[in-house]
Length: 220
Image (cartoon, rainbow, N blue to C red):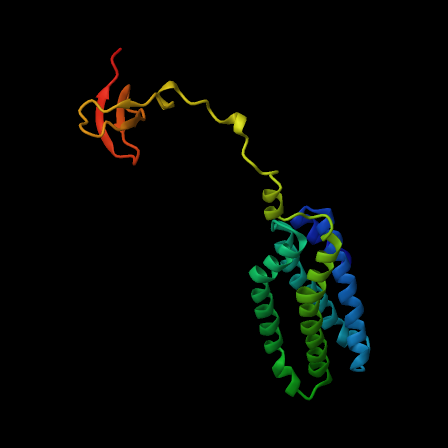
């Protein structure tokens, strides 16, 4: 059963490290489920084996959602864990709660089959959400915490600065020419800055505040 679950994860994810992490989750969930059965005096037999196998698949399903969200996120390990819980946490909780509610009616049954099924599935709800929302994020943040740099830290160190050498050089029309008095200006004789503009060979004179004062065309 465990081998089939891990094989499905490997085929669907295509990632060996991700499969290894999920394998650790499966083993941990199985150990806790055995402890849950011992806590409630549930014997391992044909009746309890069926919900136990179902619980293994559902437990790893919750962990897979959180783990996949962590794997595709960017940033440091802590930021990726927070993002995974924000994006997938509510969906995982809804899935666990809805599954638990669907088993509530079994609690009122008088048959040992119903009560055993309910107890094991209740353990699945507790163990699955405990691993998906607490154990797995803490494990990933501690395991990868020393190796991941956040995107913000990389930008602050300048590793993501744009490649200036790849920018095109400015044309002659884009270079400011020398200041000269306004041809029709009167009185102040203030200088203007000629900023060439950009339609064909047209030139546009602007003052210091960027207001167009004269337009013309460059003679060829």
